[in-house]
Image (cartoon, rainbow, N blue to C red; front, side, top):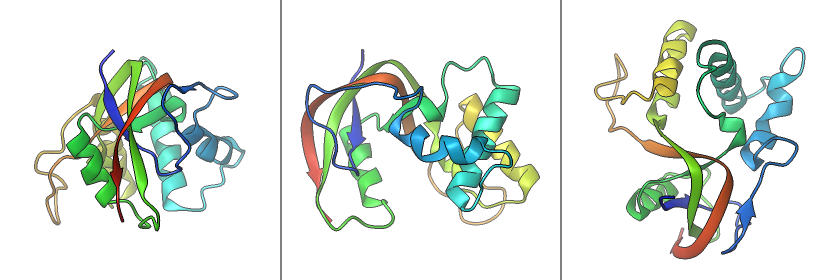
Length: 170
């Protein structure tokens, strides 16, 4: 298994820990699953609407993909990328944020910049499809400011936590 780097915003990890699914979900999934699967879904903020759209699209059109964001831990491919991610955290943490080595049997590389574009619903769906297909944003969005791709590694649980290798200071 390859080593990746997780920015531990919740400051809940420690070396040697194995992260497993709880009730079939990751910590990330627990934050969204029950809001996006209620009838009707409780889509009261942008992040919940995004995760509802992504999970619905994955199930309807990309059911052959091995994993959901609801069962994942997010990481960076390099320590440098993890530090860049930590710089962009909003809201900015008031305390130092540890960065740990992490590894898992299943890792999928996705360009999460697709998820940041603000667009009409049909365009948003196309961007979310590109995310699931593993495409790189390149010169997107179609209009507005261009940005470099922002790759994330979606690690399917279980995930083994290795050593703390850095601390990002606010």
